[in-house]
Image (cartoon, rainbow, N blue to C red; front, side):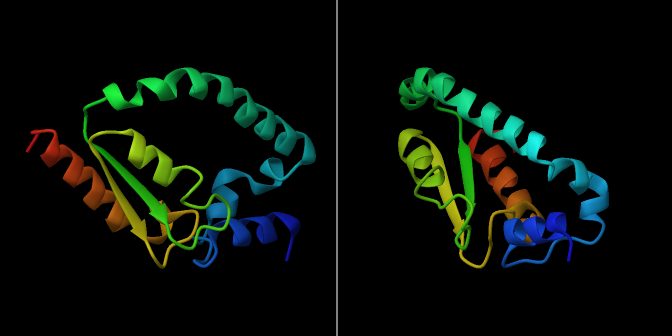
Length: 125
């Protein structure tokens, strides 16, 4: 198994990588060291902006659906999902117990259902 395929398998675990995903995203480019460094730099650069925005989260009243995989070993729920759900006054947190880091691929219906719930809560349906 190539390095790119091993990386993707770890990201998607415990679900399998969807067929054709590696070809679609260009895993060979994404797995290059320079690209990994650039991605890490971008993520780290966002922290300053989040520190400015986060204190305003309690003022946001729109419905937000926070979906997280209960078996996500890449970013555990207590890092992002739980604090976000606690900070937003109209958030609904759903932990999908059997899902990993990519629930939008592992359980797309759960994501569709979350969008539907948010639209109902927003009065759009």
